[in-house]
Structure formats: C-alpha cells, structure tokens
Length: 335
Image (tube, rainbow, N blue to C red):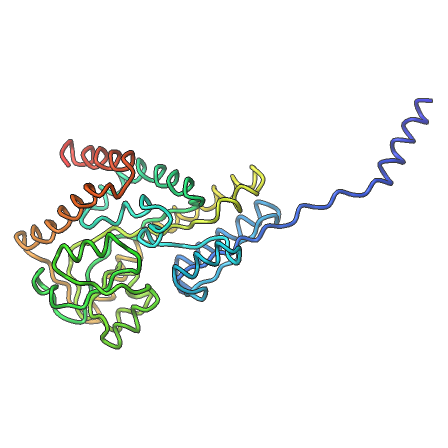
C-alpha cells in the first residue's frame, strides 16, 4: 500500500504542469553621459555583474548620450513605463526630491577631505528621501568639483555680471546662486550646452575638468576660474515599483553591484579630473586663481545662497541638521 501511494504521488507530480520560470526583468536606464566615458564603462560593467549574479533574472539596458531626451522627457518616459530609471545630477534629481541636490549648494565644501568626511553621514539620508519620493537610489558617485569655464576672461564677480551664464534646466539652487551674484542665468538642458557655447547663446558654464572634455566643451572655452564652485554628484535612480518587484536576493545583488561599481567610478573620476586639468592647460586654456579678497566675495555668494535656502526650508530639517553637524565636525567644531 505504501509503495502504491508513493507511485501515485510520483505519477501526479509528473503529470502536473511545470511552474513557469520567472520572467527576466529588464531595467532600462537613460543617461546623458556619452558612450565610451568612464561613467558608461562602469555602468556596463555593473550591468554585466548584475546579470551574472542574478543568473540572468535582472538585466540593465542603457541609453547613453541623451538619446532618450532631456530630463523632463526622461521622467515622463519613466512614468509611463518606457524607461525604469535614469542617471541624474543632483540638480536634475531635485524635481524628485529637493534633498537630492544638497551637495550642489555653492562653496559648500572647502576641500575633498571635507566631502569625504560629510558624505558617509548624508548619503543614507539622501537615499531615504529619494525612496519616500517613489524612487530607489541605486548609486551615488562624486564627480569632483565644478569650476566656472568661459569663452571670455572672468577674474571677478563683476566680470560675471556681463557674462551669459548657463544653469541646468530646473536647477533652482544654481539659478538662485547666480541671481544672488547679480547674474540672470540661461537655463538649458545639459545636452544643449555645447551647441549654445558654439552659437553664443551662452559663454560661461560650470563643469568638472573631466566633464569639460567628455562633453567637448574644451573645444570652446578659453578660461577657467580656478576656485571650486560646487561639488558634482551623479545619481542613478529607478522607479521604486520596479525595484520592489525584484526578489529580495536580487535586490541585494543589484544594490551591492551598484555600490561597488560607483566606488570604483569615484576613484576613476578623481584620477580623470587630475589628468583632464593637465590636458586643458596643455591646450592653452588659462586657469585664474582669485586672490583672498576676491575669493571672499565669491564665497559670500555661497553664504547668502545657503542663508536663503535655509529660510525657504529647501531641505528636510533632518538633512540640514545633519549637514551642519557634519561640516562642523569636519572643520574641528566650527562651520
């Protein structure tokens, strides 16, 4: 009887329909970064590692070079499911949550050492703010400091008032910064900057040294104000529903691989910026370092901008409190 029951169970199992294999999830991510850049190489390497680690259950499909359109277009495509995510700068991600652009406050950091001490305390809070806004922050990588770059010679704040200055479209902090300095900026998508420098619509923009070369701005600019303006970050966000639909094990693999890839990318960015600076100088682009008095005038713009942002409650109280405390600690007790 026991043998008969066993055979009956085996027969029933053999006749039962096989459970369908879980369909692979393809995460489509747009980015303005041109193909061939360090950013794209690491994104592709991260995608390969995720596919291998999940046995093909999760794949990344990347759309570089801005082929999916500007920031607003990309967000619309994410909303309708044509894309699942995108790479943003902090300013671009501000339309998702204001806390995403905390690092773009002008003259916030005085050195890379300060950045390295502050970010471990702030990055988790930025990630939480993004999650509350319906997205998952998979990766956040420092791109280095951005500097004012121009086709004309700029040595003082007063010189800047006569310039046609670009700000990223939708970046309210950048607009506030330049308006505080007495400048009416020109908002444009990042993808339009090169053409606008070429046509004269703008003559001044800010970027990292490596970014100026990656986007070919170095063929147009002639002068750089050698004083860090803002700290640039790149953030990869995907729709939270897409991330939540993954198995817990696959979520961990995706998160871990992005974390590893972006850590590698950050090291590469520092090296690339140093090399790019020498390349820019070799091309004949002049770097001007303001004296102490002029530097203080520039930094005054940053202090006033931050004061206005604080008055406007631009960031969540928790994040702003953490920033002030982390900066004070990094500076030995004084902010």
